[in-house]
Length: 217
Ligand code: ADP
Ligand code: MG
Image 1: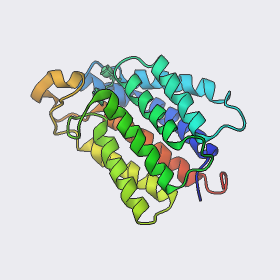
Image 2: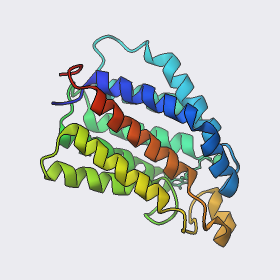
Image 3: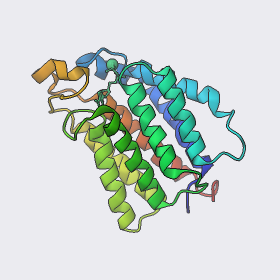
Image 4: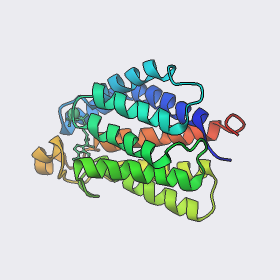
């Protein structure tokens, strides 16, 4: 069963919901190793996205919805994360093109393009204590699950689980990119807020896929 526009818009709505629910947690993480605005930044962005989502044409495809998120986040979210996450959605939209239904290979391409977009924009490497440390294991796990012949929902679940582990694994790291890099060893022991929000975004994708059976098909 492939995933179409119903899954895509459900993913976006769930992301907005979970970002809003975790706003204080993300602010707290960013207060520890940054400037305390990460939760506010993302919540503002996804709230703006929700306001525009109903304006999508009825024949919209997944790439259209992803592009709407990209342009909205880039224009409404300040800080490092707006352009970074916005670029992720922009590259993801380009990867899926006009395809109305996304199979496992398309989902892996979507996630890979999103991660590559963040790298292109922010130049972070794995282990730099950034959102890349959630996205890269997620991409790897999704590709492995797809190669194993897993379903779309299983591929996204594998990605989300790997992202959650990746976010946790940022805790002992020293940051080499972003504001947290100014702290040196004082960043040790704190989870990277962008890696944490990335794991929320990816879990929302998996939850939407688990729920979509019978809706898109
Ligand atoms: P700001 O740092 O401008 O206040 P946010 O607080 O919204 O922006 O986002 C901070 C998050 O952005 C960090 O936790 C980190 O995950 C991510 N980040 C910062 N710089 C980079 C980069 N160069 N590449 C990838 N991610 C980055
Ligand atoms: Mg910040």
